[in-house]
Image (tube, rainbow, N blue to C red):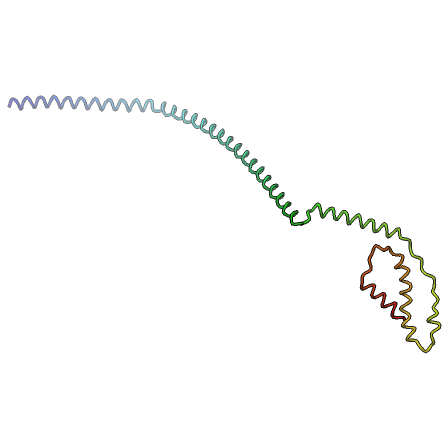
Length: 197
């Protein structure tokens, strides 16, 4: 029993040591809590201040990066537009060469032709103005009409168209020879000359 009593005393001492140790731990925890509460306000305000400074630095970095990115994008845009301009020019040159190869006139060629046509029109107008007006032929004696018997009015009617042809022939001779006479017009004139005979 002595052993049991000895063990009990040792157990009481152990329990007492555990109790005092637990109480010290509890008090240390309360002290840490009090200290944290006391310095918590100061630490919180210090953390807010450091966070604000960090945010400003981050915004500055973001602004710098965005400026450099926008400059880089602007440079790329200029290069791209320059490349498109070069590509467009190369395309236009190749199309122009292909059209010239197959013989399609270019805008400059058409403009030159218009200028030549205008110059020729001016020359034709000048030549037309220089041509002397043809004097009207004098009255031609009409012996065939007067000599014909009165009994043949049909012959006089048939000879009447010959008179305007006679008047037209001096005018035709006065016109410049630059204008060729078409075959149908020549045939019609030949028929008119042959009809009175």
